[in-house]
Length: 412
Figure 1 (cartoon, rainbow, N blue to C red):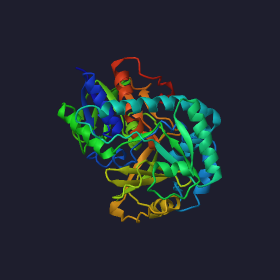
Figure 2: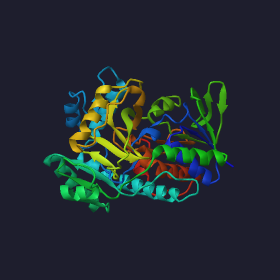
Figure 3: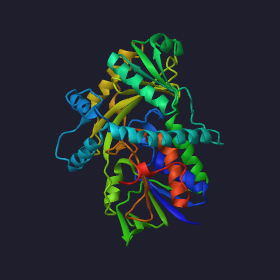
């Protein structure tokens, strides 16, 4: 039985372990923490085939510059001497073209649809009850400009075979009659779904450990040895780990781990924030995206999770309360009867989204280390794309034809 060592215990690492176990591999997962603090727990729980436009798109640079001067805006780049950010930014600018968006649309669509199907299959398995709900997502807008952009997106989505519909205010109210609205309309991303990420992660961990997948917590990789073009040993302090195949699924920490193998992976950590509030009235039953504010709102386990922002910076433990205030203040502008309180710092979750410069994840075998598979760089769609990535990792290691074409996600 071949051994696989997965570095990283987020949704991508756990999903890879799940499908590798199903194929008969002996799997060990190493994680630097206790797993419960990663992005896979604190995100909005959205499964988003609708997100076929990569972050690197025309207009993002000029919009990002405008946001830089608003302390409560959804985007921020911390100024300072950061050579990684400079390199990443130059690559981002190169890819922010209409041609890149067109080339990325079908690969991202296929990866997302595969992941959604795998979630549907997983939800039917015994022991998995992560509240998968297929009600779509409503992208609300307050301005004509945003409405035109959303309508254009819906048109392109329908051309790609994705189900989206433009709704006027009356149609929006009919879907959630108890929710007061102050919007012009919305696009209903009917192709999307949502789930409870905390429950999903716990279900996966329980299943894996019950089926002899070894999950090793609080072990940080500090050294990797190679011979020729293959990895031979991974070290966590004095402990040594050996396997036949290795999977790099460490999210925003991937560049640092890759450097131990003399590899370069272009990623920037994009910090996002979220917090929960009880919602006993159940006024919102369909997840929402607030288009102009770039805020996500998801009904979750009797609560509402509010989330947003993208701070490009080095990994850190700072909480920028101005960004959190921006999330809080945006909500009643769209939903006047939803007035979340500004949470105390101990109630704020934050995590780092591993953002590639072209907005596409890295999924594939390394060209420099023949027994290394890279699975990272999913940006804000890590949870959404986790199962599909895990399945592809298992197929690559098995030497099988992958479920979908993976050239667009090659390690580059």
